[in-house]
Image (tube, rainbow, N blue to C red; front, side, top):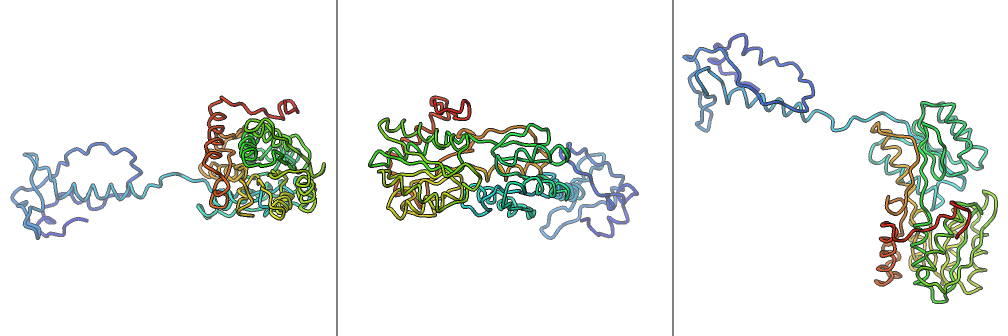
Length: 400
C-alpha cells in the first residue's frame, strides 16, 4: 500500500510508522469527515518525489506539514475495502420444512404451488427444504412433531386439515415457528395465511361468462366444505356480473379427503355437466381437477384451472386459471425467517395484496379477446378499489 522510498522511510517518526500496521477496522457504516493528519517530519527530507507521469508523489498542504496525496489515497482505499467487506443483510441459519396436504406434492395444483415457492427459495439461497408427503390425515401430527424435534424451523403446514394437529404441536414447541396455509391457528409462534379465493374466482367467472356460447357454465369442487363453497360463490358472482342470464351447474366430488384425489370421478362429473349444455367448467378440486380438465379437452370444452397456473396442461382449451399464491406464502415465510423478520399472526391475501389473480400466458392468450381482457381487468380494479365487494361464503355459510 505504501511507498518503499528509502528517503521517506528514514524520515518517518514513530507516528508515521504506526500507519503501516493499521489494525483490522470495524464496520464503519457512516464515516465522518477525516481531519488533517498531523505528521511530524523533517521538511528538508521531504522534497517532492515524481511519479512516472511527472507529477508530485506527495505535497505539503500547509504550514503544519499535512501530507495529502501520500497518505490520504491509501487510507481511503483501505476504508473502501472495509466497506465492501461488510455484508449487506445479516441472515439467520434456518432449517425449513414442509408437511404437504394429502394428494401428493406434484398434484399440479395446491401442493405443487407450495413446492414451487420452496424451490424458488432453495435456488436463491442454497438452503435445503425438508419435505413430507402424507398419505392420510392421521400423519399430519406425527410429521409436524418429528420435524420440530429435529429442529426444523420454520415448518409450513399445508391445508386447513392440519389446523387441529398444528395447534397441539405448536404448543409443545413454542420456540419453533410454524406457518399454516388456509386456516387460522391463534398462537404466537404460528403464522396463519388465508386467501380471498372469492375475489380470484370472481374474475375467472367473468371470463367464463364472456367465453360461454351456451350460457351454461360448470363448477366441480373437491371436498364439500365451506372453503370450496367460497370458490363456487365467488365464481357465481363473477358470472352474474358479466351475464345475469347465465346458469351455473355445480357438483362436489365427495365429502371426505379422498375427494381431492379422484380424477376419474372428476371426469365423470364434468362429462355429466357437458351433457347438460355446459361449455366452460371451473375445477376447484386438487388432483381431481386433472380428470375434469382432461374431460374438457376431450369434449372440446373450455376448462379453468385453480391454485397454480394450469394453462400449460391443455393449451387451446384452458381458458385461464385462478391463481392462489400459496407459492408466495411459502417463499415469504422462509425468507422472513432467514432475515430474522418472521412474525406470527394472520395474513389475509386478496387481489390487492397479490394473493390471488387470473392467469394469462402464451397457452391461453388466443382464447382471451381484447374485450374480455379489458372487462376482467376493469372488474379487478373495481375489486381492488372497493367499488365491487365480493361476498365471502364463509362469512355466513351462504352465497347471499
